[in-house]
Image (spheres, rainbow, N blue to C red):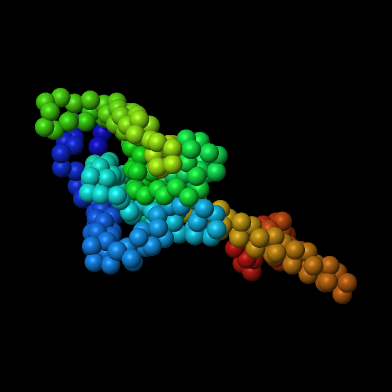
Length: 283
């Protein structure tokens, strides 16, 4: 979509990854509600195992860095987060593809969780490492910030209201109102401060992803780096083997030559380099 073009905010497409994230989150809320009604002695322990509790994370429960994002405290908590995920996440999935979008979303989710864990040990706001945090707000806030950074100058039509505004102002206002509400509602020891820092963590990691992660994603960057290092190692081994072989052959009064890449140079073609000879290796 060209810059400046308007689009309706009323009915964005349900892209595949966004749809499955919403279904999983809704399914978890339904499951926990049914368990609390039918087997309350199982529901509370399961809720604590899947929630983000900094003290448990630092004792090895690393899965909580992700699972907390699938739990919500009620239908309105769920609807608020899933609305933001749907409205803005679908655009990223269409433009980036499913894999990169999911990588970005969970990068923000985990980043928000790590921020929460770190802040819980500082005592800011009276929160403690035992405070429980749940919800997809970290991932959603990362998406909101990224949307404002990347699509900020797009005019968004605010259906059903008869006016539009630039996306960066809409996203900025949404983030501002939500954070002010979180700060106003926070009370020490009740998780509000931690939730607020989780929001900030999502914003921070959304910014870091957009600014510093390669355009094709973290996994692509890691794979490129891995294969680059692996190929460099193999080239070094080949050059080393070629030098050893030259020394060995000179000890037996025979002269063989390899180029700087470890490719064999036949005696009758001394000017061939880098696999240019018929019997040379291709680098």
